[in-house]
Length: 454
Image (tube, rainbow, N blue to C red; front, side, top):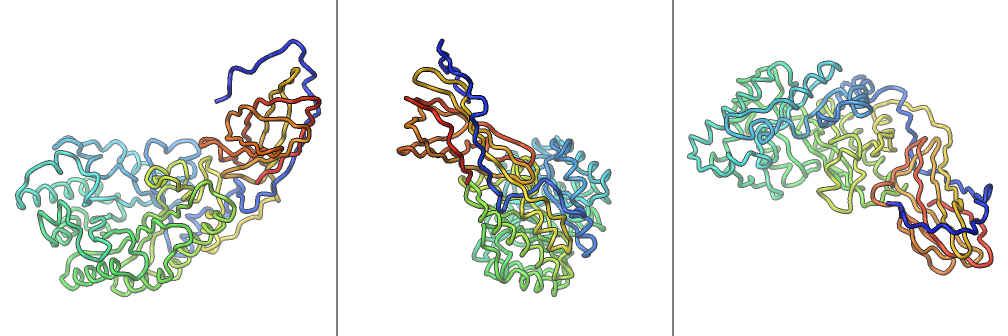
């Protein structure tokens, strides 16, 4: 917050009109707000795929709604269809947000992926805190599946019926369902879901199963066994919550081996998190990671859907779950497409119009000056480029000292000043700007320095 204690003295000097210096940064790795020539959903459709995003129902307006509707061919409710959301009290249902998302999808010609029917997490307290016999628990689960799937019969393309049933070593997760019903809760849930909507595709979904490992092999063995037993199972969901630079080398191989079992595969919750603040090198690596995942899906016929878990950084779960990490989605917090967006488009066979070489500039100005002090500011503006974080540096030539700053974290060592963005203003979209200010002291002269962005 800008300080309100800036002193005003009677012997104000001229406002130093014209004493401004501009330094430009060609935003290597920065991204234009221009989208691909063809929407992602159309590029995916041309490859026989569907590209989707998780959404929050209350945000489906304005720019968020425009992008969700125009760029994606399917929507996944991020939280709206989870048990604690739809039945927070036993027998009391709240379908408002889920209905809103389904209606939005129908209006925009989109599929809906239902998420999720059976999970160890985000269950209502009345369920998790109850004392149930196995028979009672089974009845509760069957009723829940029948009620929710039945409500949206004919409106949901695919359901994540069972979510995250395995531990990392491939053993079953010991949760409410496994402890109360045994491993066959999975087969029962799939059977009940099929009865409630015979047309919906039924999936088992898990994380850290993207490459060939103990956990994905346990999932593979389960799916193979279910098919041999005649249990309805149509697909496997690989969540793909990834860390920068860690796309498994066996991703395509793993997708293919599930496809060879005769089931579809979906990348269901893709994001690629990085250490903050993001820089151009990280954004470039993130683009390579998104491209690799998309290309692996494109290469396997039965990889039918690729869904990102929120398309904008402002709607991502990562920042609050993994402190110090974020910037995990294809769009920045101001809905400007990042390099990752263009990488997805390219992996889907699309081309993009190369945006004009853009730049972000930093303009230093003296706002007011008195006998021993001054107030200065730096305005960072972007045109044809964008920033997800920034650092402004300059060197004073007459012994000036920064004493206080707002809207930035500023340090001074000798004559060198470095200012970095605050937590709330690191993103500068194409066509946008941010300003930070500071108080300082001077003696004898107060020439305007040149500023460098980095």
